[in-house]
Amino acid sequence: MTPPTTPLAERLRPRTLDDYVGQEKLLGVKAPLRRAIAHNTIPSMILWGPPGVGKTTLALLIAEATKRPFHSLSAISSGVKELREVLTKPLGLFPPVLFIDEIHRYNKSQQDALLGAVEKGQVTLIGATTENPSFEVNSALLSRCQVYILEAFGQKELKELVQRALEKDEWLRQKTITVESYDALFRLSGGDGRKLLNLLELVVLGAGHTDEIRVTDEVVTEVAQQTIARYDKSGEQHYDIISAFIKSLRGSDPNAALYWMARMIVAGEDPTFIARRMLIMASEDIGNANPTAMIMANACMQAVKMIGYPESRIILSQVAVYLATSPKSNASYAAINDAMALAEKTAHLPVPLHLRNAPTKLMKEIGYGQDYRYAHAYEGNFVPQNFLPDELKGTRLYEPGANAREEEIRRKLHQWWSEWYGY
Image 1 (cartoon, one colour):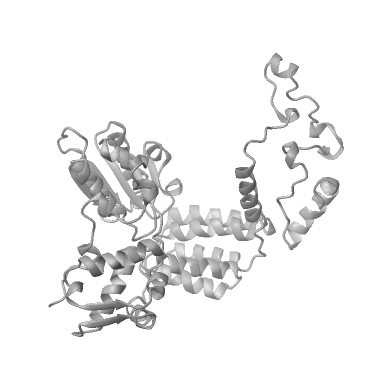
Image 2: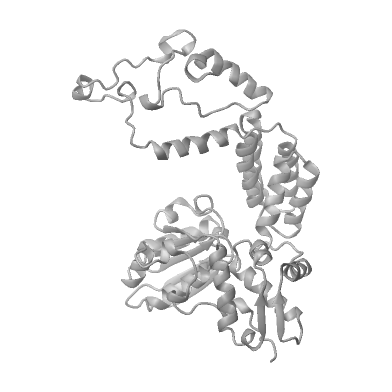
């Protein structure tokens, strides 16, 4: 049987919500989004998740389930003109679904063009993005949309996709396919369902006319090395390359950092994406070991937004080298993670009375603000007092890193808090 020209991932695209794999938190029987679909009360929404988890498919299924017209645009190839063409179409009983893939690539004016239509209920927007919408979607539009987070597929979902392909795809059913190990399929797909199915199809195609096919880790790895060798900013190696870049910066290797950055630049990666990741890294991995790193990274992000390629490559290079050769500390990053874990366990603890504001007479009478010590009224603008819930008094969350600047911070903390926190 001649191999189909349509990719396996497209041939297996779900036709109903019941066929949709994964995302139980969103689409389980009692999940809010599933109920909204059932009652045809879907809000405008942003679907945020990694590649290959079914964002486009979910948008199509929502439109189908609610019997609404479906219009699709890609933020890469469309602009305000194409938006207006969709927005001027006549309305039916319910607003049509307007799906915008990679909505994070729309600039401010393009996003503003959507705002009025969403606000008036002219369309129900479904935007898909692999980027954090808090950074990439303007606040006015974001406030009018519900953000739904789609998770990468786990091994259970990935195995279900493979089994479904073997059972339901007409072409694969003509062959005897034995999956002896899933390890390489899981590892190389990285939670991306589309990539998983592409790999499976490539293994079968690579077997030629043989009808009995053994899918082993060795075969899958060989196929992957032969076919997935190029950075693809639409998703295939997008996360692998940026991960290698950030790890090189963290590991203080400017040569490797420049190489991985060059791979992204040559592939046409958005310079603001690279700059934004460097800004995050400057805080997460350098922090107070060198506070100037964050200022440099922030200036870089602003500059590349104004300048663009090709000149912005110079700015990106300068800052990458600066970050790679800077002293490193993840002390603040570790501290906030520990603090959040503690906060989740102790959210029931009350704020001590002396730290509470007392705007009314009654509050003062019951002790709000009593015994609070105003730091500026004491020598050196400091006086020791408990700022935590009483049950957590003396709990130490921040541990200064082993670098010159944070050793100075440690000395200050020892001077102030040695008896309380043991610095």
